[in-house]
Image (cartoon, rainbow, N blue to C red; front, side, top):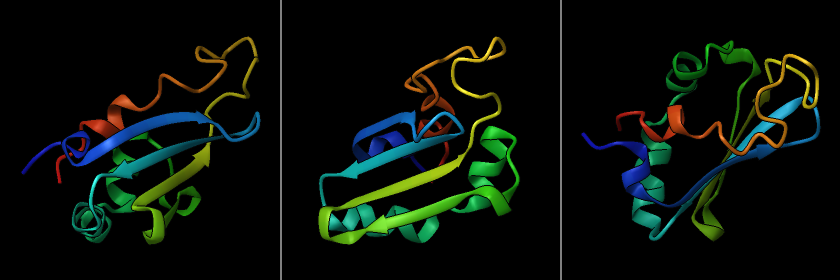
Length: 99
């Protein structure tokens, strides 16, 4: 098993508006994208981020060797409780998932 980040060329997080966070997983090859796509589950993401599986969207884009993952932020972007206004520092738990 390897960490998810070991399969990706780019793995980043960012806001998808003030209420959602989104992750872009971009792969070097179709083989890596297919391998990860077949194995990465909503349960994996749910455990890493403590979010309900029903609120997670995993969207593969095979034509560009990428996967997009989106779910609601715990705190609204820019609120007093928010610790990452741009959502760009949320990728590490995803990067460390073993595939």
